[in-house]
Length: 250
Image 1 (cartoon, rainbow, N blue to C red):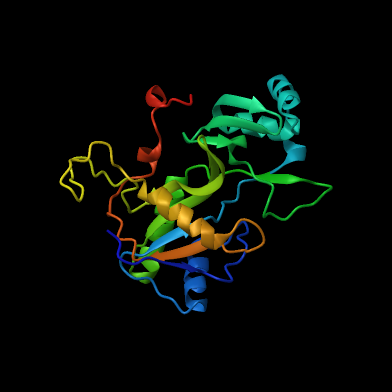
Image 2 (tube, helix red, strand yellow):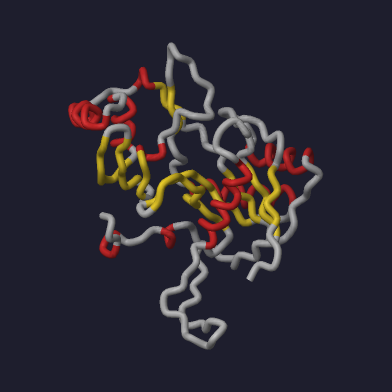
């Protein structure tokens, strides 16, 4: 159990541009915030990769035009949603719920138009990282090589949930940690054996960090979590995804 948890924003983290040395940006941000990495630290990161797409470059299919008419969305963006998805699950005006090609169920395949520089005459959008687990591993390994400390890493994105309104931060990529804390077989305070208890600790930490990051003009895409005491593991985030066979919402 975590006795005390600190969520420390790395203030002043710059906008990441193509060609930037991301590991060095983290090292510089830690220095500028008078911080240094410690064993057990977790970096929760909402920095996106260079996956910008100009809508003018998108070739729209007949399927995308039809789906755009249902959803009332730009056919070019709908084409990108289809390209980033395994399947379309639900459609209503304004939103298309899909199974992203990385496995998570997401509105509009996580394609974003906010918090990026925009040109009204040449609009573009930002896609989610191609492989968030690989991105988390690369950051962890790069920091280990240059600082001697390998922080655990969570790639964070905002998503809705089937049962509730609003969005929360959820882990779409992890490195160096066990994203699920399997407590099945443990006992509670009264000695009862736990049968299904399996906290999604990566998601819990991602949600907490999102509260610090903000969602609009706060410009705080990185939070250092200290004291989380997450179990180390060389696995990715795949265990957080519920199998379709037992998913009551698909």
